[in-house]
Amino acid sequence: MKRFFLSLICFGMIAAVSAQSETSQFVFPKRLLVGDLAELHYTFSSGVEFFPEEEQPDEKPLLLAKLPFSIDNNDFTLTKAVLQRNGTMYTVVLTFIPWKTGYLDFPQFDLYSAVFGTSAVPFIIDPEAVEVNSVLVEEEMALRPLIPPLLFPGTIYFVYFMLILLIVLLVFVIQAVIRWRTISDRLAEKRLLRKYAKSSRYAMRQLKKLEKNSHKIHDTAFCLAIQKIYRRYLSVRLGIDFNCLATNQFYPAFERATSGVLDGFIVDNMEAIIEIFIRMDYVRFAQNSMESRKKPESRYAAVLKEGERQELINTSRAIIRLFERGK
Image 1 (cartoon, rainbow, N blue to C red):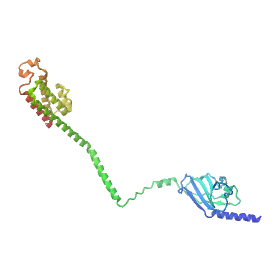
Image 2 (cartoon, helix red, strand yellow; image 1 turned 90 degrees about the vertical axis):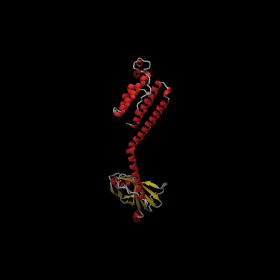
Image 3 (tube, one colour; image 1 turned 90 degrees about the horizontal axis):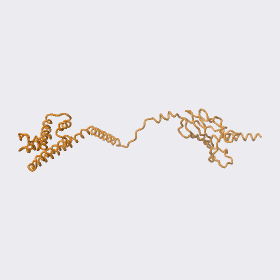
Image 4 (cartoon, helix red, strand yellow; image 1 turned 60 degrees about the vertical axis):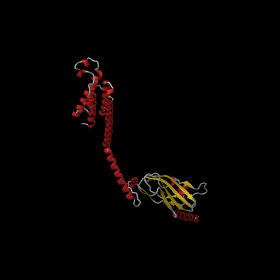
């Protein structure tokens, strides 16, 4: 009987020594934070058979009730505990969630009791303490200033060149935007001046054509031609459609075209044009009227006087030239 107890004691001593020999431990994740789900792997080599005559000897759960600590406490919550075997190597895997920062030290426990429920000889497992870090510390580390990228030799000169080129382009774009309206106005002004010049050349050609064929047409047709030349020219020059205006509407049209500002030059030309239109209207519409039969004929006759056609053409040319010169 004494020999039996001595054998058990020797076996326990050998088992205890075996449990502490060739041990290793690691924690996943390596950097552990409060609230993370982690695993502690405690690996050791032992001749003790923890999987006797079992069909699936790879892994078995530990009896949590046999562990000498509460699985849910202020320091941690143990969610799973298993024992894995690989030949003569065993691994205790503890799955847990830490709740405090600092070093977490799991209490030592009897593995034999946790596996089989009873233990004649204790097989002590004592994991090393693991460090638990704060989430705030992790965030502070994440907010550290970034390290500038490394550049190949000579690259910095290319970067400086590109920055200078970008600044030059930016200044050019800003100046172009600032001057865009001025440039646009100048282009519009040039287009308008070309339009005026084209219109005046057309009016001069029509006057020359009318002068050449003056002896072939009646006074009424001549007066109508003079008015058409003026109406077309004034419509382009002043931007108002004079084709649909009666002679008595010319003065308000001139005021609208000049925004009510009538200088001496415009007034003189306006009055000369209106007088020509009044004379042309009289010749066109007063023929055979009572007014046209009054005496003296030189004043009331609804016909053009001798030399009046050439005078009208010359006057019209002069008015158009004055409009183009602006004075």
